[in-house]
Image (tube, rainbow, N blue to C red):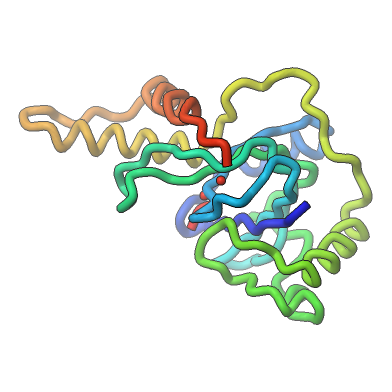
Length: 210
């Protein structure tokens, strides 16, 4: 099992749903999510992910989970390649990083955690084995030991506020670019429809947002 870093920058995405998601995870709900993974295609189901808040204080590791779906392509005309690589995963621990992370940035500067480059610009970076071992040990000390969450029933396409927002923005941009067409406000229904279409495109193999 390999561990990967998922990056969250509140300057790029405020993530207003985070407090509610953190409460659900704390209550024992197996909450699934989808996240961009940059260019990483080697991520496999069962791999470990850690969420890292960057760009604005309080910085640090604030969540963890297990990959449930290998990288797949989500159409995104805003990118040069025309799509994003995303993974699905299930949280096993999450706190509201608007308040404080579990492992602050200062602790990540201590050895052996310091061997890892934590200030990655995009998600999908592999966490080095020596840093991963120390991170898992400290994580367990601070959050407790748990078994991976079990998804007893199929959850259907994973929903993500970030991907929904990207889909809505893309739909609005496409409408605005058509001659004689006034841009329409992207409704929740439009965003959800675009997200459903995106999540159907499966490529067996691997964004937080860069």
